[in-house]
Image 1 (cartoon, helix red, strand yellow):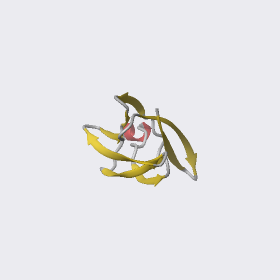
Image 2 (image 1 turned 180 degrees about the vertical axis):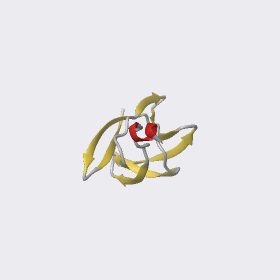
Image 3 (image 1 turned 135 degrees about the vertical axis):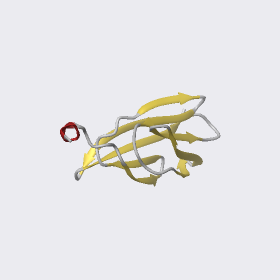
Image 4 (image 1 turned 90 degrees about the vertical axis):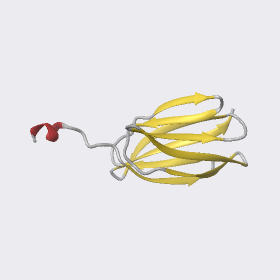
Length: 107
């Protein structure tokens, strides 16, 4: 019981917003993503709870596919397009919640 008082809240993905050239992820606490790039595919790992999702977004006028999947204790975001992509991300607190913005562009 006492241990739970000092244990931080688990990270929960509350929602995903798809915008032009970026994805916005909303969390209850600050996320700490681990980024990878493999053959032009953008991969972000988050030790988080949340549901699997997928969709498309437009990156510089062309479509890219994104998928959020569970892999053991992580949620893994993969963004794939017909051309190599790169990403930039930042997290900020907004009204007591955390927003992780992943901006995408062609390499």
